Amino acid sequence: MVRKYSNNSILPLIAIICLLYSFWIFPSNLIAQDIDILLKNGHVFDPKNEIDGILDVAITEGKIFRVAKDISGSQAKKVIDASGMYVCPGLIDIHTHVFVGSIPGKFADGSNSLSPDDFTLRAGITTVVDAGTSGWRNFPKFKEQVIDHSKTRILAFLNIVGSGMTGDDQQENITDMNVSQTIKCINEYPDIIVGVKIGHYTGNLWTPFDRASEAAKRTDRPMFVECHLPQYTLEDQLDRMRPGDIITHSYEKISERSSVIGENGLVLPLVFQAKEKGVLFDVGHGGAGFWFSEAIPALEQGLVPNSFGSDLHRFSMNSGMKDMLNIMSKYMAMGMEEKDILLRATWYPAKSIKREDLGNLGVGTVADVAVISVRNGYFGYVDAGKNKITGNKKFEAELTIRAGKILWDLNGISATPFELK
Ligand SMILES: [Zn+2]
Image 1 (cartoon, rainbow, N blue to C red):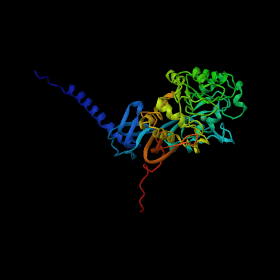
Image 2: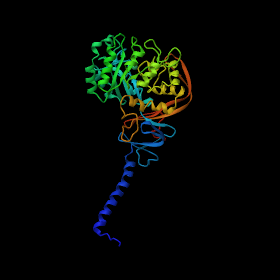
Image 3: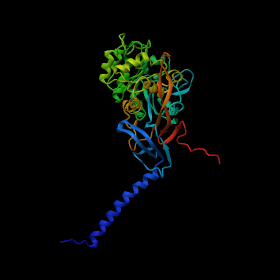
Image 4: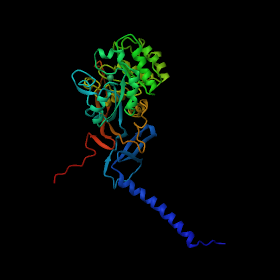
């Protein structure tokens, strides 16, 4: 028997079909109308989300809206051709000094630090971590003076020294290294302070190191060790570091700290033991922290940097370091694969500071994006000792987008072609 539907039973069915149809049609209109920026045909590299291929990235209202093939640009407000370029998360530099101020010759609130926007965006960097230029006493001033007014996202390792990097006796003042005040400051600014730094101390006591470690441990954050600690042996420092703690200036060769390479040219076993334990190795190039004589054998033997912290400050930027892209290009010249380098400039540093909301292009995340090209040519790369290697490739930041806004465009790929009327 064929069942006959009454009008009463058909009407709800039609209503449901209409509703489903409207939902099916409506989102495609919504997608087209809502796109603020559409990056077309770039090589999208987003290691967190295992995306690695030619795709489009749609950005709207400051967030990643969609990552897919062939997103229609018919109603997007701006369409940018990213063919032949990497489209990756905005780069993260976890070692900088950006507490710029008016005190001559000082890092904390001084002229030795740099204004981040002047140097980051042109290098594809959307997030920096200030490496302990401030401590619990002057962090509020740092926030008010620099962090709140910068387009670059500024995070911070808080120095265990209350007044941060003053460059004077204050840095040796153990009574100013206050664990409870440091923790209190971190808890007041939990979205900005990502760890605790120990960096400059010339005494024999382990109190500063232990206090930094305790404050980091009690706030579930990494300790960042900057190694201007001549009385501590490398072995003792690595021994006292916990898994997830970060050592910077990893490939330095100066009197302040012993090298990671032994006299026999091999990476010291104690260094590999620390790596096994979970200690993370940051480059921390700076003016004196990166030597090919250390970095090349380290790379060949498997001591690969987890991140490319630049140690950006007034002096390093005009030395062999230049910027983080130059460090990344050095590693390309040293033989590291392009994608391995981009991984260590985006997702790995985000994880190391426990900010997994950053360093990726997941739908709904903040639209911090770097469009990077690889130029071919003849390039020289210089270390802290003015030694040079050469390479035929170089990373260049074509476009930097921070929270959905284009803040750097090297060759005008987002601009309108000029026509004389
Ligand atoms: Zn530094």
